[in-house]
Image (cartoon, rainbow, N blue to C red; front, side, top):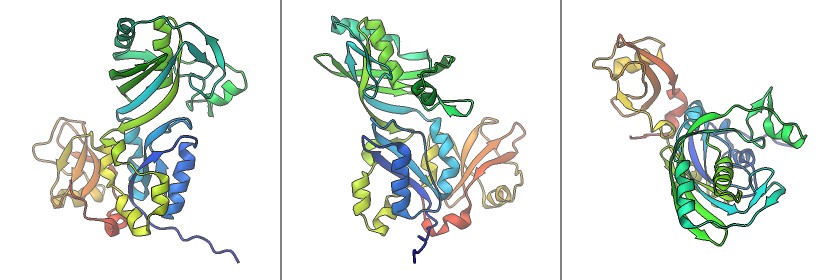
Length: 311
C-alpha cells in the first residue's frame, strides 16, 4: 500500500538561491516537498537560464506574496554585444551578428539613457498573459501579439566590468522591469545589438542573495534546520511603513471591526501593523477619519507554533 504523505502547517519565508536550468515553479515544488508543506507559493518567476534570489512563501506568508511582487529588485546582468536573438537571451536563436566598435564613453552614455523613468514593451517571450495564455506560447506558435509599452523605473545601472564584447551590469529597478529588454535596448543604442547571456537576481525588497540557501544545502538539512531557515512573513512587506496598535485595537481588527487609531499616519496608506508584543498582525489601511481597516491579517492560531518573531 502507498501511504499518503502527511502535510505540515509550515509558515514563513524561505530565501532560495535558484540554480540555473530549472523553472521557478520546479524549485518551489522541490522546496515544498522537502518541507512537506500544506501550502506554498513564490513571489515572481526567474527564467530557467537565470539564477539567484527567489523568495518562497509557506502557509500564512502566502497571504503577503503579492506585495513582494511590487518591491524593487536588483540584478547582475551580463550582456553579449554584437549579437541579437529571438528571445533576447541565450535560449533563443541568433537573429543578427554585427561588429562591435564602441568605446567606454559611448557605453556610459547608452547606460545613462536608461536610468530613471522609462517605458518598456514587454517581450513576446514572457509569462505575461493575453486572453489567459502566456505570451511565450503565442511566440512559439509564430504569433505576434500587440503589447503596450508600460512605465518602469531603473533606479541605477552600474558598469561592473567590460571584457571583450561583454558588459557586466548591476541594475536596481522597479517591479515589472524586463532585464532582457533593457539589454536589447542598450545594444540598439550602441548600434551593435545585444542580448542577455547571464542573469542573477541579487535582491528583492529587503531581502538579499547572501541570505539565500541552495537547494542542495536544503536537501541536506534536518527538518529542524530547514524550519530554522524560515523568515517571518513581515519581511515580504518590509518596504511598507509600520504602526503599533494596542491590544484592544488588535483584537478589534481581528474581529473585522474598525478601531479609531490615535495620531494616525498619512491617510489611506498601507501599513504593517504590530501589537505591543511586536507580533505582526498584517496589513491595515487608515482612512481620513482615523478609522483602521484590516486589509490582510495573519491567522495567529496557525502561526503560534512557529514563533516569537521580533521586528
